[in-house]
Image (cartoon, rainbow, N blue to C red; front, side):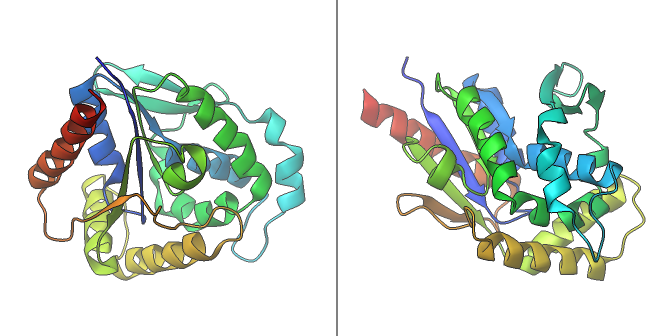
Length: 231
């Protein structure tokens, strides 16, 4: 059976990872959360005191990139691969709002992107991969057989993210989450290196009013149509 590369891009908190995990599980494909990779680099910068609200030592981070090792290890109990930074499981830590507040700045650094894009391309060279992020269909896999671009209103995304954080026990305010979503939208769309843009051949999916089941069925139909066209 033919295998394809599925590239899923879009704004923060649009459920890219959720749909990507669902597809990978159904199809038996490899799932790669590229956003988690940038979050891991961001956490490293925070741990090394390289980034603050008013200061970001970009040169120091670039100098230390060779010391950053990011791996994924499948957790059979959870049903997905968790992120490890230099051998330490950081899956929960990288999902916090403080990491979210800095990740777009770190992701805008060209040297960081070059390092991670090379790793991502290596992961997907044999196809049969579902990868989500900001530049998968435009930079990482411009020749992907199926490209999706996920979108939703900032308010709807903030509501989803707020519920996710509260359910996890985080002490956050909805206003802070909304502000973070809006700031990340601006930074992701306006960075010089690989800004967030919809690939010309990507299919846009606005999931503002779609349930997870409706979204999955819609995307699965697109996957099946793509596979049929290759036969």
